[in-house]
Image (tube, rainbow, N blue to C red):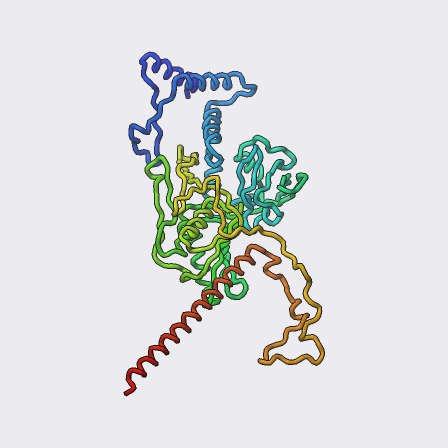
Length: 462
């Protein structure tokens, strides 16, 4: 293979002699020719700077590096400088991306990015070594096995955290509101992400947890909803938990939002390429028949999670509760450049139905609630009327509740998850309000019908 410097120098000489600019035409994923206005021109002087730098690195660096490697470094450098989400994917990284979207991969179960030269945790994934060890969204990883990660690339950091299942790794963590960095020892494992989990909380409310948006997430969530409806056919409300969900497949987020919408826009994207401009709309049918709904988000909710939360919020389908989301409002496209290598580049920004861009801003919840540990201001009473000797019985024959009974509060929801507890309270309040409004309407209807009947009887009387 001819040296890049020699090749580019020949091009430069030709360009200078012909007094014409150098054209470099980008190839789209479909390899179709682009319009003339998309062709870019490389300035000759900047091209000379690149070739000189390349020559000096190739000839003077302390270790000899082949042209193929240097060219790959150049591509990596271009992509790393674009934004935190654009990257070069070698064969290993490309495979990792594929298995990641299918839900099975090796490692610690951490979604990470780069901030101030350190590795920042976007969110730990449910039921993984990272989540079990106590890694939290927002943590900065400053050392891996005692070695500083300052300045290394994201792909190198991820590579260092990977390893054979069963092997240990020590992460040095810097956390907000914690004065000193601390170490966490994690044991690597085979990560199998369960995208959807469900439960019924407080007897009457459907709890749907989406940990990550994979190819089958929409169908899996629909199946979980049907399962809960079989268990309880009289559900009072729905909680969709997207906390610490780092995102995933765009189409999966559209399918999830569509489950709760009858019509209207879900999300639209805008970019420079024609294919990057798309709109996604809901299809008829609400899987939960319009039940009141709360969506839970926090700082670890990113990308596809924000699409769902933003769509349901803009369409007035759900209340969003929690803390402001991560703010990743961009779409990445993977473009193959060889059989085993690809580039992942940001090609579009997405917007909510009302035209909001979430990029670097996030979704602001309708009701802001931090997750906190709740403790009672006053302890339960040691004695109640029902404990008094000779107390009167309930006039309606109702069951008595003694102090000891009131103290039986095992694993209370508000002690386990304060945000979920608030979501349940909101749904319970909405249900009671709707029930009261319905009862009021029925009484008004009965009054109206009685008045009409009385008027009719008066008219018929001779």
